[in-house]
Amino acid sequence: MNIRSAMYRPTLSLFFLLLASSASSFDINSILSQFSDFSVFNGYLSQTNLVFAINSRSTITILAVSNDGMSALSGLPLDAIQRVLSLHVILDYYDEQKLHHLSHKTTHLTTLFQTTGTATGEEGFLNVTVLSSGTIAFGSAMQGASLSANLVKSIASQPYDVSVLQISSVIFPPGFNDGSSSIPPVNITSALVNSGFRAFAELLQSTGAIQTFQNSAKSGVTIFAPKDQAITKLTTNLTSDQKVSLALYHAVAGYLPSQYLKKVAAPLGTLASNGNSNFQLKVQPNGENVALDTGVNTVSIVKTVLDQQQVVLYSIDNALKAPEIFSPGTHLAFPPLTPPAAATPSPDPFAVSPPAPPSDDAESPAPSDIAPDASSPADGPVADASASAPAAEVPPPSSLNDKEKDTSSAARLAYSFCLGVTLGMLYL
Image (cartoon, rainbow, N blue to C red; front, side, top):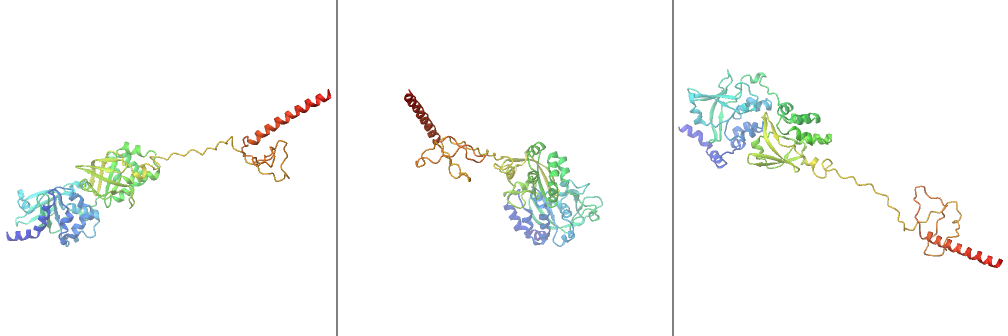
């Protein structure tokens, strides 16, 4: 009894810290960061994004391995490490007392790896057995596997939400090191087509965006897929570059399961953001529902379609309209009206005609018997009608001089008439 009390004593301060938090909320990184001996294990939970899957659970048990024991994973690729560590996450609450009182002294426990959909046979289960010596041993539930790790002590617990137990060594499933344990990456195109998002899959293929999606999946990617009709309607009049941006706008780098997505406060950069503040999404959680606000439209997440190997695929009820493409003032959604061509102003019929330029070969202005007195300050010189002018020039409208010309002609006719009458009388 004294030995057991001594084992629990180092965890008391952390236990009360956990109790102070929400009964259904915990952060596994924060719990393990209190113990330097588990820094490598804790670091791998972050690097493999398992931390998000763990924190999204309401009931969980972690089988942690100290830094010395984690050397067994040295040199393995990150996806292999993720698979191994997911076997160390039990989807139920178990502390020392509960393990010691197992019925029949043995049972199979469901692990996080079982939820990925890639486990075959009993790969996603652990065998836990209470030995006759009282030791609690763990191992893969696969046929022929040995009980390769023993319980060392309890690290932290928050009944009945989270329990962290230390085990003596890493648990490997049989055949893990012979190459048969390689996990094929998720084929995003096939996942989309099989889930009813054929038009979106075709958009990714035709634009080449699928390669960016697939590369991002290596370290985690979250995809928001609209139904066929929504994405087809939206891409009808887009340019090639706009289609690429729209495709990339429907994914976020990083593994964001639903429980974590509900806690996001800052805007999310998408694969189209390219490291800047463009093409972002705002997450709007509302209880168990989550919406995405683009600034142009708001789209609701309908359900989680796929959650495995660091790839999360959500179904959304409409396509996301990126503000950089669809906001007012952009070329696509609100094209600027073409301004009408400037009309040639009609000549003012009452404007005074400008003088025509003098001819180079003319010695003097052509005489005109109807030209007004040149000394008159009110009237400018009248251009000769026979003077050459540019072909494109519109003939000047009637001016004040034309009116004076008409007046002079009338006077001349009257003078001629009177002169004729006088001569006729003299002749008689």
